[in-house]
Image 1 (cartoon, rainbow, N blue to C red):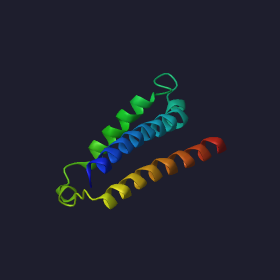
Image 2 (cartoon, rainbow, N blue to C red):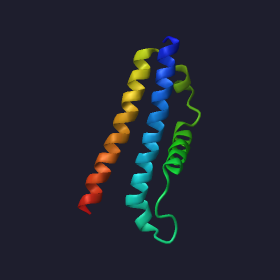
Image 3 (cartoon, one colour):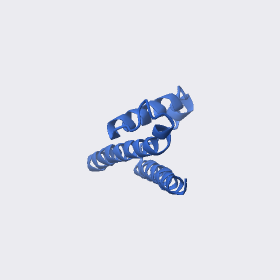
Length: 102
C-alpha cells in the first residue's frame, strides 16, 4: 500500500469507528435502556465507541495467531473495511426490525 492508500484507509477506519459507535448507541437505546429505566437510558455515540473498543479489546485477547497473520495489503484492508461496515449495518438493520416489531 502506498501512502495515499494508507491515509484513505485510516480515514475510513475512523468513519467506521464512529458508525459502529452510532450502532452501539442506538442498540443500547432500544434494548438495554428500557430494561433499566432508572440507570442509563441512552448513551452517546462517543460512549458507544468506547463500549465497542472495550469489546474489541476483550474479544481479541492475546491471540498470537492473529498477529502472525497480519496482512497489510490493500486487498486485506478493503476486506476488513467491508466486513466492519456490513457487520454494523446488519446489526443496525435487524435491531430496527426487532425494535419496530416489539
